[in-house]
Length: 333
Image 1 (spheres, helix red, strand yellow):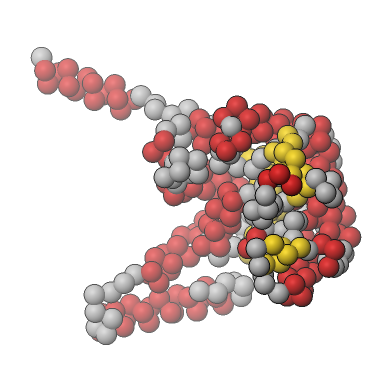
Image 2 (cartoon, rainbow, N blue to C red; image 1 turned 135 degrees about the horizontal axis):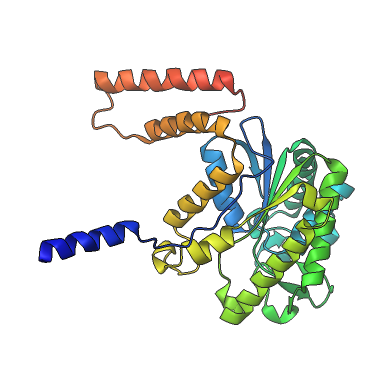
């Protein structure tokens, strides 16, 4: 009886489904190797942009650094559209470095003039990116924001300035909805044909609190879906459920990094696969396979770099790279 029981058990497990897959319709506005993409938003936007870079798509990610909330993203786009010029009034000195509350600390520097020049150059480039973009991918991370008490301005980054100088606030659904609508309209003043893909970051902001994180994500999702259902944004905008995939399909801590908050590489790879299936044109997949093969070949570490077999291998790889770069002039390996 035992073999029969074991066989039946195996059969049962074979047919059981251990996840709740989220149905994602194929996007109407697909990405291929002619597409020009700008990705803006949270650290998860960086995760997806790294995949786009790996497969050698034409992609620019977070020129101003990581931006977590809708008002910060809206302000960056507004500055680019209005051709704002940063001046001394927009930067401050703290902890031996110059910072800007509207930009990530990755741009901070010990030289004020260097920071101002960098910020202004980035704004010019952002305007050009948006004008040329076929797709803009925007990832929102949180509804929680910090208002500078002295200036009464909501900041994109606190730069570790003491928290007593800020007031923490939760953006309402209405405020987020207005911000998203403004962002869409600003993008379309520069590029009416740009296709928009929105997503909510699967990274949980537990420092805000467990309930507070859920309220934050809920406000983002509610506002996004309200905007996407109203033309004209609804006509050319799409929602990709990265947060929902993490919460439902990958409902297990084995898919988290050591901090138990960020998705680990397995989760990132899985969400990327779902993204690629939904958003990337099938005609691009064969090129993606070629690029991936070359990336793996370039990462290969031989036992004997001087061996004849490895030299032949290198020559074959260079030949494939030359062919691919001749087909796609923007690709550089």
